[in-house]
Length: 322
Image (cartoon, rainbow, N blue to C red; front, side, top):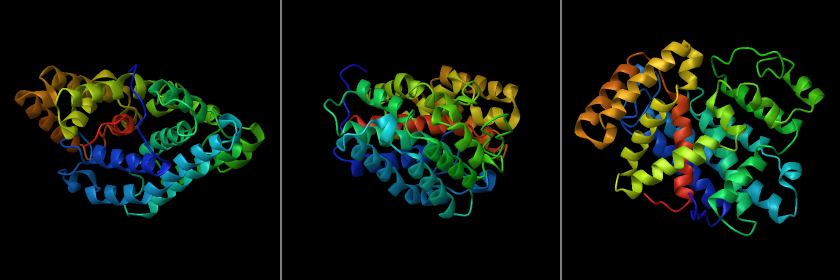
């Protein structure tokens, strides 16, 4: 990715790119096992329109996150000491849930796009716009704040009421005394996301300066669109390839490791057939979508979709236009 620069003019534009990335990822069809523009709501228990409502509701909070990063830097403050990203995360979560009746739809989008927007806002206040600098700022942003920010993060997650989180010995988001524990331990974002970094892909992103997003998802998406693949097909292709590379965290939480590995093996067969890049592969993509959707949400590769949304944001932020 050497030579790739961030091409964002303002915090407001960073917020718009987050919104567009979320819209494009959700819309991409036929993204296997996920809601998309042509999916059957009777199988998913959620409608495409509910996702659109959630994304529109979250949009102001993406802009708020970018503006927070920008104001921190131009105000001469240290990111790790002076930046407070928790309110933007909490606000996006609560707006998402309040905007429609299906509950938690896009928590993963929030957890990945808010730090990216914040870092983009920060880069607007410094010299240089390289993608390497943006990743460095992402590393700082994910190490920013204090226990009050982590408390806001937990409050946002709890408002989504996500399933399958399980219980942990310390800093448990489901604990009724989570606020007292976070403040007593002076918890940081890194403390919170390190708990599940070995088992959850979003936690791994937070503790690795978004390694998958910067080193695999963005380069793959960019390569696809530069070769002439349309944005819809590029998103679906990257999704299937990423699913083939690593079992989905959400499927693991719902069904265990064996089920997640089995779905990744199926995705690998789709990729080997060409995926969205061949007629035979397209047929297999559609068949996999039908099979996973028939499980009625139990085999939804939702975390993979979240990771792709983060890559789409970077694609837009570095100059690709639909």
